[in-house]
Length: 149
Image (cartoon, rainbow, N blue to C red; front, side, top):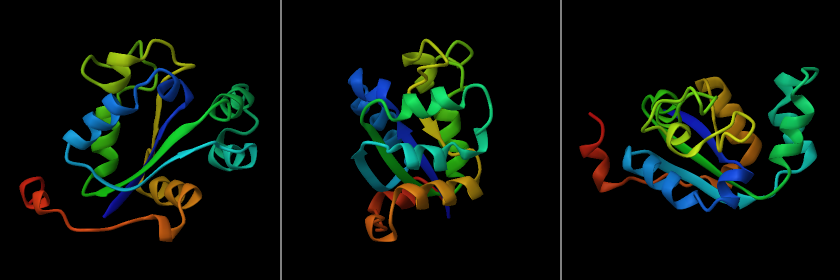
């Protein structure tokens, strides 16, 4: 099963969009295996965004993600990376399709509301950065048989 890390960034939290965003993700049938409100430390931000270190926007990413509380969510399931990313929409909200989270709620690429893992490998890595194995809860849901074959 694939895992994806979803981060509702400080702008989503401050704008009161946790409920609407989680509702959309849950309505897609995603299985939440971990969820917590967190304040990202500078150290964790550097680890998370390490692939961008040295790029002109790196300092801004770190400053932004550490500027306020975030909601960190781990999801698991078949094709979860693709499902989450199609629900989230394009990185730049201006280019995100209507009906996506960024297309409906976002305005600016610098405040694009949400992070979603971009590959199964990154999903595993990112979930492990933000959650200990003890924090991840795996359980069967009776509805699962009606969501995937």
